[in-house]
Image (cartoon, rainbow, N blue to C red):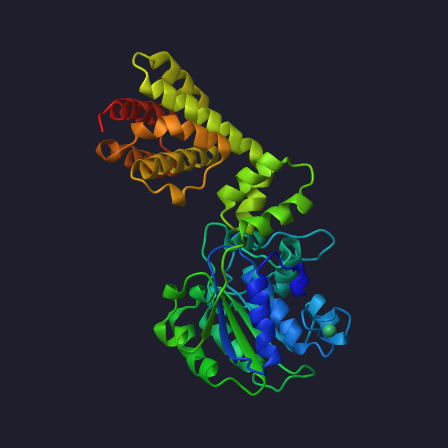
Length: 400
Ligand SMILES: [Zn+2]
């Protein structure tokens, strides 16, 4: 990974390069920032830059032996750690791969407490390639087939890290450990790593790549120099999406950028799922119109019939969408328009709709929240959406 392949983040790149130029590379750094903003890719590009003997003022060379090994993720002095867990179903087999062999299937052959991330290296490397070094937890969990569980970094993994990094670098200037999602460190694993983080072996660089500093033990936080990685700017994201999705129109890209809020994973999901967004918008506006009108029971019935057919996951998505627009309406009523992230159509709709959502009927928002929970618990959709619609019809007519 070279800096030139990272979307935006020019300020951070310069700052990282400056640490190398001035010889002030802190041995324990935390790349901190919410969402899929490129912090992981930056950590890899930084490590590659530090170890490239032909680096320029702005980037690693990309062709020396070190860079080639970095590109193949096969450098003997580059280590990763990341959350894993056992999968009851086993990890999916991949084409042309013998992952069906139980001995090669870490998730089946080991107990959770014995799992270490190196057992998952082949999945991890193919995952990073798929994601172009922009990982996110849900899709990683899906990759190792543990969608409904959490991954973690356990004591066995902490021991593995200490052992693997105990030696001098084989060929690089710096051995590098990139630990993704330290929030998932088990308490005892954190404690075991404290001393290692404080006094790592010589010529060792440790980079934590984290979303939420607050979820780390204060003793860990204090040992790392924090580099705050901001979200991707709208203009950088726009340039990237324009190149990546040449068929998507300017207007749509603009809408996606507003909703993605600097998160690459969201931007991709929205681009791939643009149709769904339009459907939700149409459904929401007609639903709200029939709730506002009096004597529109037939329209409400039609809505209920419609939504009962789309499946639970889509129902949840729709309700989350409705929740967002109702919250945005409430916000604009109380003069916080700057936090709004709306598409053009949504903004136009909300201009007329927002007066209907106010502090006296904010119970609507709670009702939808509760409905999301109930959909997850397999409630009967016809009854659930009928009751919800009737509740909203009543609430929405309340005076501000
Ligand atoms: Zn190089």
